[in-house]
Image (cartoon, rainbow over all chains, first blue to last red; front, top):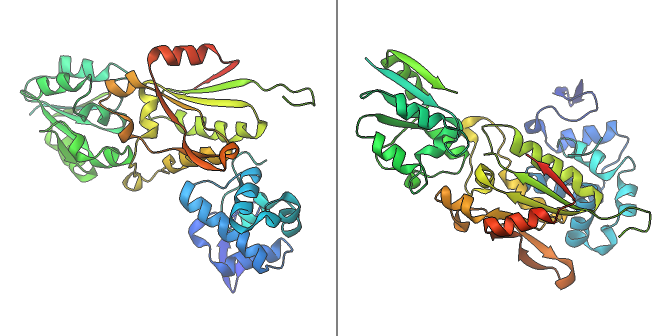
Length: 110
Length: 102
Length: 139
């Protein structure tokens, strides 16, 4: 599958995850978000950027539980809960936000 | 012309380094690759085996495999030469045959 | 103990292989991360060549394979903080704790103080720890 980003074609797998992580930039993220039916707010970007930093450091996309705890620590207790994260990413924060962040599907996520 | 022996298993997990050094002839070469590179480290239970063999055998170790495993050059038994992929090809070409101890 | 009928078991993952020569190490790490979701009492053992998995300074760029060693540092986030390394296995390989990555966790019950997850234990201690487990996974 491929995603059209400003005339440029970006390759994805059948679920919409980027095939090459190096293809990612903010425009690609926005295009994936549109395909997911999401309008990216600053709050969405905070989570997406956090995921990218986490991947950079640990080479994995964190499990939802780990993400929730870490977001709470970094962005404040009011955001470190699954209700807040599911409001931003209705189909699952780890799954949907990871896709927008250009990361692979989280380990253990089916 | 002589043989070049490659060893790709950890000497702490398999006995291929022992077999290799038991049978390698004087003047032949040994190239440690993949998990075999752990055999090039000094101060281990296998270091003496390698050091003793060095009087008659030339030892080489593949640099990229050392780096992947976090083994810095200062940890190696002195006298073992670090080589790259290009040297690997040259070494194979310079010897009469290759024996891979799998 | 969960009140939903589940019991917390002592689970141990035993790692005995070097990191890149075979797929065991990476497979084990993935199973550990997936298994962490089940809230069990998990510990990890590194013996024999498994101790090489925790070596500092791994760089796989020239090899063209993924360097998964940074992922061990995320284990603390997954509440996996009992990591046992057999001293005799280190010694046989000319290694000591300084050659290993520092793995830590934040202790929820102690104001999130950062604590060390790695415990260097003797063969006898490792044997005792193994004996206490309900379930053992071998890699």
